Length: 223
Ligand SMILES: Cc1cc2nc3c(=O)[nH]c(=O)nc-3n(C[C@H](O)[C@H](O)[C@H](O)COP(=O)(O)O)c2cc1C
Image (cartoon, rainbow, N blue to C red; front, side, top):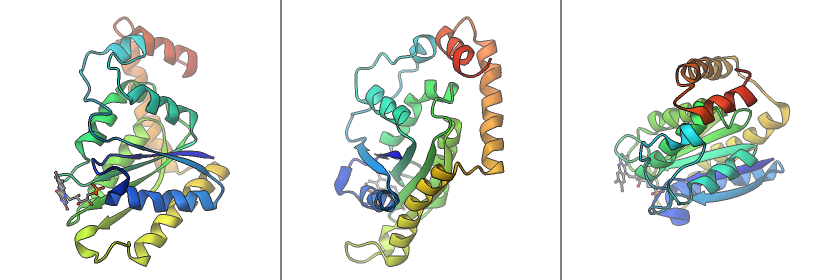
């Protein structure tokens, strides 16, 4: 299994989020996965311009790291997203990445993959952000298997507490196991299906404006 880890923190690999995400990937590697971590530092992925070119032509007009990150995700079997809590939400870097996935969302381009999410914060509210990122995974077609988080303000020293570390390792292992077993969760299948039906209706409505996505649906999604 190939897993991409994507860290949305300006602190990159030295940050809390990357350190926690690394433990999740370590858990996955113990189960035989091959992993690669990518960092959304600085302006490596710019905010969406809202030009609709991705819907019309299947590519973004901006020349930055987005397309190569997206291709790596398409080629992988799993995706682990990590973000710090920035004012009760994901970081701007992670949000820019999510917005740029608008075309992938319309086509549920990552369908069939498995995912997990990682959040760190200063003072809390991580479940809100984990749920948001899990929802993002689902609307791209990815089955989320769970989340792990850490409240840094409650931690003394550099290492994560054993409880957080074990949860992170277990989450990584579960990601691989669920992918191997092709585990399905009825509620998640229902939510992905419901969103897919919404996108199907959108494609029919936007057939003339968004030819690339309409053709993608015709070719790959039984429209
Ligand atoms: C701009 C900014 C906004 C933040 N907002 C929150 C917040 O709303 N709640 C919170 O608990 N922590 C907040 N934090 C703290 C970070 O979530 C926390 O330090 C996190 O572990 C940083 O992860 P990183 O090292 O991977 O960047 C904020 C930090 C920054 C820089």
